[in-house]
Image (cartoon, rainbow, N blue to C red; front, top):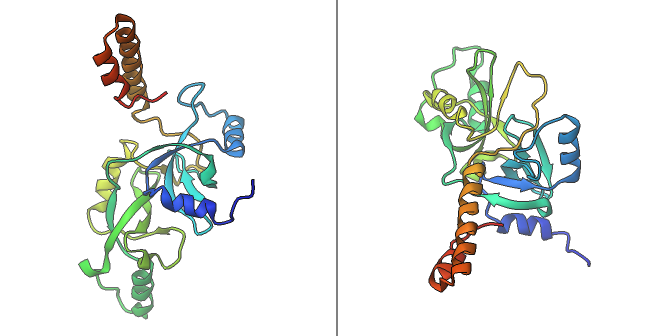
Length: 229
């Protein structure tokens, strides 16, 4: 079968992925690397879920593990998607504003930034220093014009945002790496998967029970409950 070159990019755009949605990936090279490092999966038969960072111009998906390892994979290797209820946003300084303020300094003391120097941005991943403080936060701005073609940007944050991110980092809502660790490790995000598996197991058991008892109404109701295989 001949595939049009633009198909992956078109498919990636059609999926409507947002930063920090989780993708189950079946990329052979990445899975092999994960096994070589001895990283356990959520369950023996599970494929890991990665955090989406962005859709690259070529149509590849930039993804990250829970510990901040970043790579790119084909959209054709995505098996499943877990959409997050809401993207995590911060007030961050665009690269253009940062460079403008830096060049305007000219040896003079730099004035404190004002509210207009920050814009809404999606959190992609966070790096903590050795004292467990936010060292840097990689973002993608909501207004794409502010991204200036850059892949991602470790942007200065508005006052109070670093403390808020530190509280969220403990909940596994985005990739977190540490300055003291030379190389970020593997590890998929299993948040909520065990609870989902338990719920599906209950639904399937109830479906079989209703079918064996000849309860057609219960079978119809459970069959429409959206249980996953």
